[in-house]
Length: 226
Ligand SMILES: [Zn+2]
Image 1 (cartoon, rainbow, N blue to C red):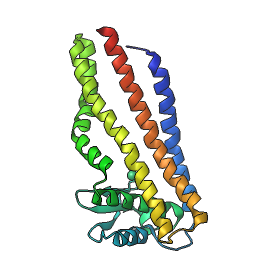
Image 2: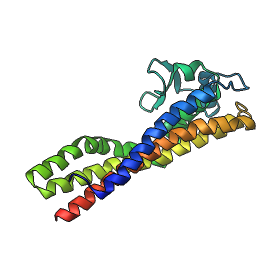
Image 3: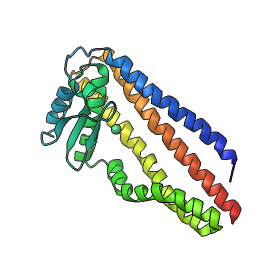
């Protein structure tokens, strides 16, 4: 229970996750200093892509949620953009705004991975909260079945993270395609947009890796006990 061989790999994944987080901030700041030649703000870009996609019912709102809090709310059909993204006209602002629009387009087209992600959410949410308690209880009380239930619930949480990957990659791809197609960025500006979006994707990859490794570790412990 104390040191497991898998902990070494989990530690590496944790390092990668922390590194990816600093890279997201670093890339966002770096490309925040590069103004897009179109001169459009993140809010304008979001509005124009939405309208062009026939999504005029989706609103674009300014959110006080601080840096990197940008998101699409599928229930309210609202894209909420943080100050630097909403008002900014840098490559970073455009990349993030277009990425969130990508999620709204996925929602409209009922993109299969997004639908699956929404279905998994309630179970994954319960799983991530209950699994640690079930593991701990199972070990302390010596009830192996409790660990088994914990593993099943934790698997739902891990699957949710795995399904998030194609959803995020697809939103970024849609974002880049739309920005280029509508002439909001030039071909030469694609590199900056990609750097911002790829860094964000890396954080999802790293945290998913960590979750998968943890799941493997728990399954290994579970099998040893039986
Ligand atoms: Zn996203």
